[in-house]
Every structure is written in C-alpha cells, then in structure tokens.
Image (cartoon, rainbow, N blue to C red):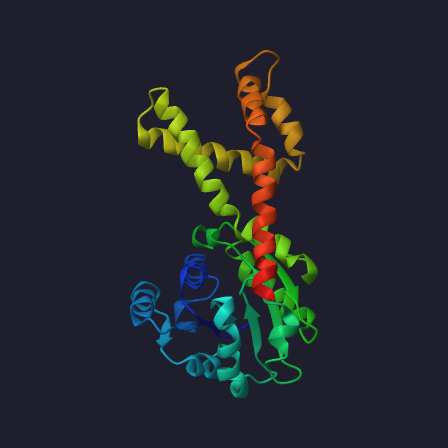
Length: 269
C-alpha cells in the first residue's frame, strides 16, 4: 500500500467486517485507517478494538485518506456522493461495495476523471475468508486494480470480473453465506436427531462444509468428481444424495442465487 491511508464511509456489518479483517491480517495498521458513521457507538467499538481514527463527518475521512471505501446502503449512496463530491480529487481512489449500483451511476455523481472501483465482497471478510469480485471503472488504473485486489485479498480471495456480471456475483458470493448457514444448521439438526449433542453436531457440520469447500479450491477438481469419490455403490452417502435430489436441493440453490441476482439488478435501477 506504500503508506497510503485507507478510509471507510459506513461501518455497518460489511464495513466493520472489512476493517476487522484488514486489521487482523495486519495489512494496514489501525492507525492508518479512518472511518465515519452516523452511529457513534459503532465507531467507538472499532476505535477501542483496533485503534482506528473515527469521525461522524464523512468529509474528515475523504480529506485524511488516499483510498476511500464506500460501505453504505445502495439507497443512500447518491446522497453520500453528492456530499463528498467537492473533496474527492483525482489523486484519491473510491471503492464502492454498494450492491447493484453501477460504476457509471457512481462516476456521474463525481467530478470527471474520478477513479472508481466497484467491489462485491461478502461477510466472511470477518474471518479473512471473503470472496470478492472487482470491476475497475473507466478512470481506474492498473495500479488501482492491483491495490484493490491486495486490500480484499488480505481478507480472502479476490478476482476481477466484467461489471455486467456483478449482479451474478452479488447473488452468488455476496448473498451466498446466508444460503450456507441454514445448510450447516440443518445438517447439525440431522446429527442431533440421531443422538449427537448440539455443540458437537454444529462443529462437525461446519467443519464438513469448510473441508468440502477447501477440497474444491485446492484440488481444482470438479465438485461432481469429488462427490463421486465419496459415494460408494450401495453405500450410505448415495442414499443421502438420493434424498437431496428428490427434495430438489440443486434447483433450490440455483433459484436462490438467481433471485438474489435479480434483486441486485432492481437495486441498481
């Protein structure tokens, strides 16, 4: 980051998760992070835990930092941009994580030449396991893209995608953790039904999901191949897979991603 200072406008769930992840990985020290929010309690908690600089005025963050993360709800992003417009010079980089809001809509609210990068991270930034997709704006440089990849790579995996696919990213990885948590809970419920205590069942279910995901990422094998490795002829696993197929699990997950993606498109209009 070459000594650059990082700012956050908004410290809700995603903003605070990113701050926590970045501080925990020690990519940027808390003393070089600035944050603003209307809720002083959020700011005070982050200041006490990570030693970041805080303010209730967004302008303070813009003035004092080189890279500013816009971590506000899509519905209020336009008013935030209007408020900070005069302080956003071309030597600053803006990163928007507002779901569904397109780059041109952001750039049109700012001075010509403003550098903007759009990112869709997810809540797993809290534990440095986020999946983040990045789309640079028309004025962003290669160095800007590399800096954003590094920032979000410090809290998980980050990759560049064309902007027209960002709604799909929002539906898949942005909303995805909320689709997996009920799966872990339901698997644990099955274990409890069969006699396991609740805490053991949750640990076993969560570790099973994490281990399966790690196998996909590290082996680079198709998920179907990995599934076949576990399903012995006439065994226990194929019985369970059969029940999942009868219950329409694949279609349910596909429809959840599609529905979330469509909502992202609606928010951007």
